[in-house]
Image 1 (cartoon, one colour):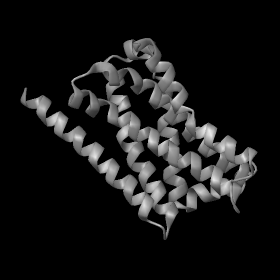
Image 2: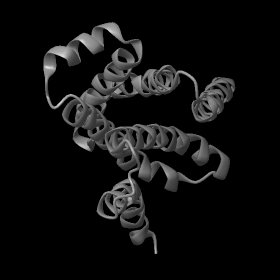
Image 3: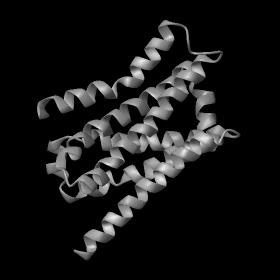
Length: 193
């Protein structure tokens, strides 16, 4: 049964692609299709960041190592959806016109922090393999702590983007705080042992 867990999680992780494909095919993207696509992948990027961050707490709560087996895959899906989100913004919204895009990155704080989060994800994706874990040794863990900064940047990106509608970004912020508090509590309990 365990052999089916990873393929099942992989297929479930493609759910955002299934949803947007259905909406494109049946013309259900609404009045602003470009915004719908960009926001869809942005929100799913945050969801996958939270799923990745939740693997260690779930391991501790359930006392099972099974959760850790999915962390790398979920982390790579985070990068995958973040890249689609960024490329949708650059390609669909700006049609790869880099001059106004660079202007936006420098002048709009939500674009700047979102782009920064994506850049920080690149080294994590590059060093996600077992080979890189062995090569980097203790530095691998230090590098992958960037996920906490990325998660904060991602939530700030969403809050600053929203301007007036704060309900959904606030939910994301609360989830992030809970996940970070879990991490602090686990680190404290480790130091006592």
